Length: 526
Image (cartoon, rainbow, N blue to C red):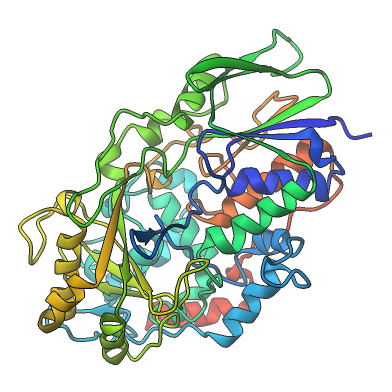
């Protein structure tokens, strides 16, 4: 008999949904014994896709996957039927899509003169190469809480390589050198193709439609209960000398308190923090609000737990520095193909094949992606979308007299059109385009400089009936700000709690593959 026969899951992001699937698939728990408590009215967490053709579509982010690194995600999606073709899995659907639509960016970097930069020239000098090799060879304990900008010289931070790497993975110069080291090791195989993004795999539609909706349908078919509008804000631990046992979940629904009491056969998996907490949308004529006072419940729960028990991390390390972790993304919805036709002619990439286009001299460090159409379920013919983001929020635009944090949707469109050099069609594009900008206060908070104890393990010391999920748990050697991290954490949590005798798929180490290591070394050494 499994140690538990009922589970409470807090949150419904990809980590939480994965935990529910794994409880059913690998631990044998009946779906009707699983209750998912979610503050929002919809599941999916950061994997979102919303809107319509008239008011504008929006995704807060766009994920890029790889075959080698995302072993836990593919393992999970091998069990979930596709919505469009139930006879094949979501993984099979994604694989087929990427076989037809190969990624090969021809305009990865663009300069201030609207010229495509030869991004195969990474721009390294000898010192840059030595600094990179030293980073890979330095243990995490020796790096400590050092930021990237203190580890590398100014020349490195101005190279083509750093412009591509940081915008591919959303690193700020002040982020953790430890996290960068992990990324360099986890994605070592991408070094020789970082200028083309040839290793990138994308989903057929946005990740909400391609991944979240099929998972939710599968869970509902297995009897899993979703309780939306339920904000879990605190917990009680039992007085026990033998370990740390979760006794009660305290929540709010419609402003009224309610509690869930865990019996001896109950367990809980709790999502800590949220990188999309307190995100706010703007519109064509209004900049999105920057929320600083933590109105969502994700951080409240973690803070209250950490106050009550040791070994549960330090949430303030990640949610206490909004100006270091925020940035804005934007989604264009177009009723004319004109802009995409011009981008295709300029870049040489059909929609869905180009990956990120980064404007290297942009004061916002703006990047855009043109997805394959349709990108949203039921997106009409003749409607097109484009997604982008800017890493630097507090500098004036190159062409508008506002920071990106202050910019409306139409301000962002104007800035983008000037960076492309398409001023001649600006007015026509404005008349046929809706722009939804989104401000996210904590979107890269996972990369904050931290100490070893700031992130708790998936199974905290002494925890007897609960595990932790999400982007703010510690999984040695793996990389945060990825879907893979959340799924891997769910596997560790479920397998540990339920005593599942299955191995979590191993972390891919490109450096252990002689061919990959040699190709990467050649790239680094020029």
